[in-house]
Image (tube, rainbow, N blue to C red):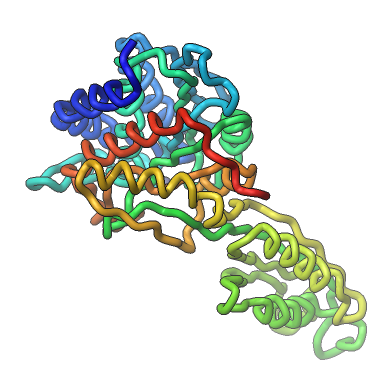
Length: 396
Ligand SMILES: [Zn+2]
């Protein structure tokens, strides 16, 4: 049997020849509209991925979902020689932020080494990378441990359906690679803020503001007082921010407002901050600043933070493999959230931004640097292979 070093060389060599095939797959995936709310579209992307993987003899488990796009999990079983530390999980989302119909107006195009189109970087190119890493590893099979690739369909709306599958797929894993786009600098993502969104609803008592002002209880005043306190929770020094970005309320100018509501966005760096912030928000909502008003708060979506300590060990390995392949890479912290926070918060070493390099995500100018497809796939494949000796779990 070949040594892992020899296997690594083989994986690297196979991927070297895949540039054109990867670009072709990228074009196919970009040219399928797949907004998070478009089940037909995200499932059509799934159909293509299943076809490619099964044609290569890779097992794919498809879990049908009624509303959200189906969940796919591709698996390479290990030879059982290294089961102590679990499988390796690679993951990515098939959905984009672009409305159905975008492809007709502006499908995949290419200029030199740059690919354009909806979701080309975020993250159809990351899906292609994960598919080709898996196909490379399949050619060396069986590895000492299992490798799984998860394809979810609703990350751009906060993974309301996907997060449970992510937790399940990540349980017991030795490492997780999330193929969100690499930074424009070429860096990977080693830390991300978490975020949570809330709907705050206040009820008061209506009254004519001229005839019976004193009988009213203004929900708008109560909400306004809460907003001032909620915004005071922002602390740039520690990375905690709060923002009420939408408010609604009232009936007419001359009616004391019987109802008002606000949508609150919060960001935080650690899970400890998240818990403290939730407590502070609940306390502010519970206060009755205006007698006769009542308020409730409900979390509407959320991403857990990817704390930098959860990526340290894995990043060191990735960086060493990248150096061996001839490129420099640093770790970057970003305020943007992703599914990597879910696995990092489970205590599993997690690296994000391992996809091909891209920029201008969520805009019409989004692009992917195609010359990074192969080297970044090689870096992930080599890092996966380096994980045969255990990755020490950071202490929670
Ligand atoms: Zn993304």
